[in-house]
Length: 276
Image (tube, rainbow, N blue to C red):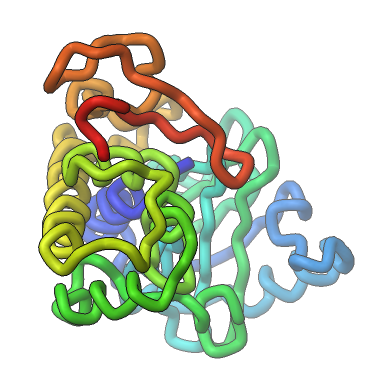
């Protein structure tokens, strides 16, 4: 699933491509992509979105947590990629391959693609109308994510550190990959209770979160996402990962085998020797 670094890289690459362009036409090809969270009214939502975004200029491209935001003259387009969603670009109104939603603009077409249909595109008059975004926690790459604030958040939680980091209502944008990586860099056991962390270890984890995310953004941005290539995906991430997806392989610090456990129904990767 694309997490904060991947979505941030997409936002940075997309901004110069679409910002200032006018959406001449919106085509919802697979209504499931705009289906409301209730699971009903997909056709109505598709028809409404096609009407509402037509002839609107894209004023800004932003990111909120794992959400990609297209600020329009009236309202907002919100995209969430979930597991496999991605964007593609065509230099004309003609598209090919699997496309869920096509935004035809002056000079090209932006397509939202998710063959497994987990990702979503939504138009809303205001971000205030989307509870999931309204309830997002602090963005870890903003000045508001201070050591003091983070330490207080930890003290108020009795959850294991890994599950604490995955809670989007506390910290927005961290997922399964970068929570495991930050905990490895901070040398902290993912099963440790958040409220039991000392001030020094809280500072260490805070620094690890910021460092890991910034390093991942740099990796996701080099090379720049190529929306014209329908097969594009982020390259080189495996080279910066220290534990995620490396069960049974040697820890890059101590050479002991990386372990995988399940927490909250998701895999956690860590080194039992380094992380205590």
